[in-house]
Image (cartoon, rainbow, N blue to C red; front, side, top):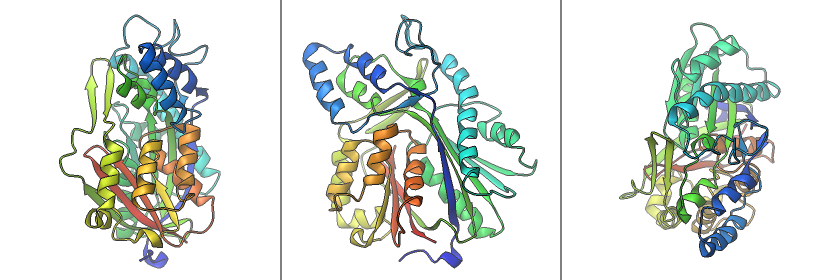
Length: 356
């Protein structure tokens, strides 16, 4: 059933931000050059079908980051310390740009809680504290930092905000997701990891969750893990950044799971896909979106918002779903929506929503 606006916390508005440097073509060219000729041709075909035109990076301007003299232009891969030094400055700065975009859409009022999700870096004091100080939030603001969950961390952040407002209707929760995925390029020479790295870009989003019936009413959250799938998505901390393993089996496993009525009911919170008129699916890649659309027999344009985010920004990990929700908010009314994301586990997490 659609959430009841009078009883349900609301996602009031979403602001988004990306860096200024489009690195998609440069990174694609770098990856292609690392492959033998026959695999390079296959890479070109798959890259052309990826549904991505742009990906944005915080890495410094003044040339390609993979060119000589660029961040990745040396003989050895940058160490984790060098990558985290950039994260410590650039992640809060990009997050604050997203907050400014949010305040252009809604007056946030007195923020009582700050929930921040980020899995592409670590710094202490945390970026939640850095953001809170930069915004001049009161010293007693309650903070929650969600780290290293991956692509479905936006659901965890919104779910936490929903629980806070449900428990305290006077709460006003600022939710921020910020990811700098391009800080973790790895010097792979195999096709699968290079194609996986082709998906990722940088981005940040900020949202306000409060009790006023505006924006999207947030329904009941849901979560479900696929059995025997923990090896399909892995995110390891190494001496040269964070190494992502994204198996080519992921789309097929998602499709098979969603085709099973029992798993589908749990993964969608019991909602009948035929009753859904608004889909906010994490744009983890074209093959994942195709798998969801096929398994659920969705209409041709059901995932347009997700595909547009993928085209314009690539996969920004936890920030991606927030970008999709921003497009949903700007579109037609939704009577029964579902937000859905996949990540390490392999797990599906999400929640229902409806226009206020």
